[in-house]
Image (cartoon, rainbow, N blue to C red; front, side, top):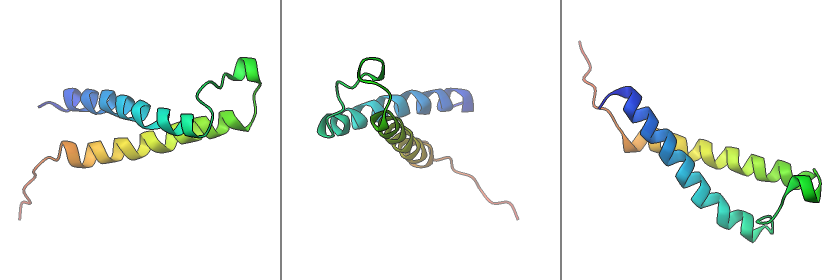
Length: 76
């Protein structure tokens, strides 16, 4: 599989998994219906964006390391 196709699949799966993981967490924290334009810009916006960034980085790391592990041989 080419690197472009592999990277595209990883990015799409990262977005999907991040969405599925952050939705229940936001619901648990009471931020499921939070809209910064209606409710005002406050700490909830930073928490929501920070949560999204941290989870997406973790998911991207796991997918890129373990899902498409390439086998390389060491040349002596």
